Image (tube, rainbow, N blue to C red; front, side, top):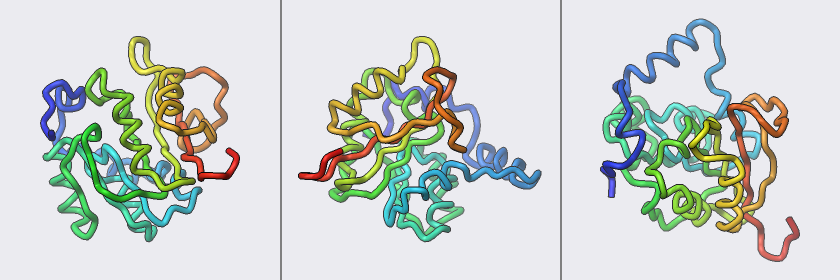
Length: 200
């Protein structure tokens, strides 16, 4: 399934892939580092990574530039058109994170850009469980999203991750590793898949 009418992103997207990327291009031209997510992911030195909910591939293509083998997945065909045009040598797949089955695993999976609060309501736990299935033992699931009243809470997200067999490794309030104070409007969470026979 690649065109879920209940998907929050598909319901609310108001810009094209090119226009979305142009915002970051302007910020980069003004001297801003717009690759904080890729730098954060690279702290874990993955050889392989999935950019889950990749959109235009901004994070994934920067990881690929840093010699990480990347697969990008998104439900939005228009956003993927931009990703494919800008980085044709990366594999960009049109798929729903609920039903995705790549028959392979990754060292890291990153869900940047509020992916977890844009999925179809009620599918959040299915998304987390499916991402866990695509992780190598010892691999990390990295998700950054806004914490808003009535949307996915950090406590609920942690419970979903635990149900999927993942353990919280670290949490920050920004991609730049500003300390997490137990509250705030944004969280970057890292959950790790245990290695059999190795204590967490």
